[in-house]
Amino acid sequence: MIAIKEEITFQDFYKVLFENKKISWDSSIQDRVEESFTFLQEFAKNKVIYGVNTGFGPMAQYQIETQDLTALQYNLIRSHASGAGKIMEPLYVKSLMLARLNTLSLGKSGVHQSVIEVMTQLLNKEITPLIFEHGGVGASGDLVQLAHLALVLIGEGEVFYQGKRCDTQEVFKQEGIQPIQVKGREGLGLMNGTSAMTGIGIVNTIYAKRLLNWSVFASSLINELVEAYDDHFSEQLNAAKKHKGQQEIAGLMRTHLKDSGRIKSRVQHLYNPKEEKVFKEKVQEYYSLRCVPQILGPIKDTIRNTESILIEEVNSANDNPIVDVASQQIYHGGNFHGDYIALEMDKLKLGITKLSMLAERQLNYLLNAKLNELFPPFINLGTLGLNFGVQGMQFTAVSTTAENQALSNSMYIHSIPNNNDNQDVVSMGTNAANMTKTVIDNAYEVVAIQLIALTQAAYFSEKGKKLSSASVSILEQLKELVPPFKTDEAIYPYIKKVKEFLLENEAYREKK
Image (cartoon, rainbow, N blue to C red; front, side, top):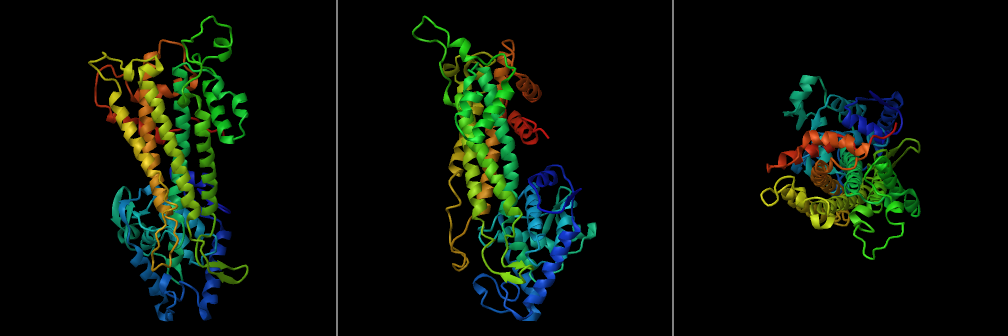
């Protein structure tokens, strides 16, 4: 059980999403939610407050009669539950829910305490609302996606429970859950925020960090297998550049390769006088091998910055209006606008696309015997000409990388005015987050293919100089999934197995 007392952390998200930890809220949080609700109820009695006693968006100039205020909130939820496209996976919905729940717990939204209680029950009982990927434009919040969440909280719509798509009412009855109480602005409070894009973004970032480490592993292993020189990941060379990410990637490579018997020392091989004027062995490796810290370093820094922005957003009141009990005022503005997240998702998407491009180029180097001059064409462990090795899967890696390149066009700059031009500049943040999700998933496929090829290269080289213990440890696991391809067979099942392995495991364990 995670007891949340102050700001939620990235680690809290990880534990809820990937370790299925339950959550509870400190009594002080419950008190501030109740205080915010009570203040709003009293404050709004003789004042015009957007979304409490007015219509929404361009219809905000219409004041709503007292007897219709509850119906107003229900109408908003039902009318905006209009999503389409792919259904969001439960993992991403859980993240969305936790993000919205934490925002509402700040006591800046004036919602009834039952909203916190019911959402917590849903999370802890693994009940996830049916939410679609296509919907909100990320400016007046993720209105459409969050409307589907709100629809479930009022006891309507559909949920996923115990692996099945079910009617919300039936699941609530089975689990003894009562719908939320709609008292003032629960509909708008639930819908008016950035929690869909932020929730998806948090899962994206977790998977991106894991993928980056797999890319470092693959890059270290290929340098090892082709017997590259040691200085391009040396501390001295990388300290000459001030970027933290580059230095960290080089450090990971040094740790990985510290006991390798295949990495060459430049001092021993090229710094001794030689008679020949044309060197048989390469003086420097191709960029895809030599520039790993410089290529993956910016991606590591980008992921770090994205994580920081996301956790700031999830601990922010991204609502409108904002209820401020301390100053006894209600403030109208645009905290629901998703530009912070949209921009970070675009940057993360660019970084992961570059990662997939690096993996594809390293794969090409490994498969092209004229380039590496070490392995048979396509690492063919069978009969050349008769068998094909892993030739076929290169096409998949290339086409998937090309798709990532196309998907990496910015969503942040694709604002389209809508809502009678009330929303005239929007973020498209949830679109950006969903496209980044696709790019990350694609990149896992490319790296999976790369690691299958590296495993074949390891089979070919296993009687040579010893590999590092870090390589051997992971290769032992990969060899359980991927045999040496001495005869031709369908490779797609192996791509699926290795991709799942990468998604579920870490290349490097962080020290606690």
